[in-house]
Length: 364
Image 1 (tube, rainbow, N blue to C red):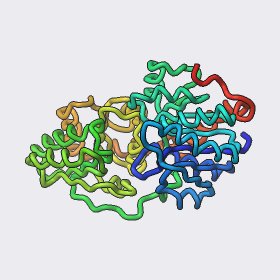
Image 2 (cartoon, one colour):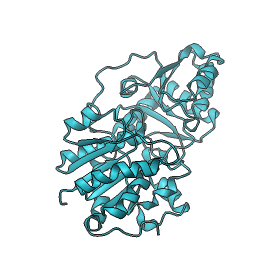
Image 3 (cartoon, rainbow, N blue to C red):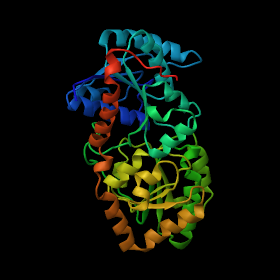
């Protein structure tokens, strides 16, 4: 594999965004393995991390409004003309469309990564010469929405060994036990209401249990209001955003993820790394992330009763909980950033010739 000049392109690089975490970890790993890596975005919360790993950062305007794709393309074009990259990896739809416009004027290989398959515009990621799906479930969804099978490649997310964080959290949060924790953006699709209702059922049998909800989002007030109406209210704790949620995962007894939609959640890799017993919903890429039940218990989505039963089973059965935690922590090569990068570089390799010669008819 020849060294490449690679550009990762995003509209922004704020913390607490999964697609940003993947892009930063990939950029750092690609630079570590000898490639010339550039990171183009609006406001970036990871500039020191990128710089410390040899990734060159280029700041552009953080575009908004109806004409943001044109504005993004206008900002990207002079950077591309100067760098002449082999590959641009565009993360999210607006970046993909802007990169496609620039590709018409300055040929390079264009790879798009579909992080949010639930986005109604995600089928527009077909503009890439290749489109990376973060799970097989996402690949099938994108095929059903019209992205040609020949363009799609599956590269599952990895988290272990990434440049954003130390290998192990430095400050472990002390929890009350038995502890159930979740880490999620506080959006409807994460099923936080279901988890709160499930925990209320757990609390009826185990009044010593505690629930820790790690994350921020637009629905926080609504979820706090729901929690306050439960008999278990004093045992439900909202921590807000944590830069390294593994500081909670390292202490919890059980990690729960009640998502209604989730392409391939990074937090499951973090929970496995920390050796958590895991209970999660059987939706989208979650079964793949948990080896279809080998690395965690799977329950139906939108079913607080089933979720409560699984949580209570693990709280009451300590040997079973420890066995599930050990299974989660074993054989973690699949969730490393190194593996994710190898798979990504294989996709780049497929389009490298056209990166310097000509572009395909990406909209066909």
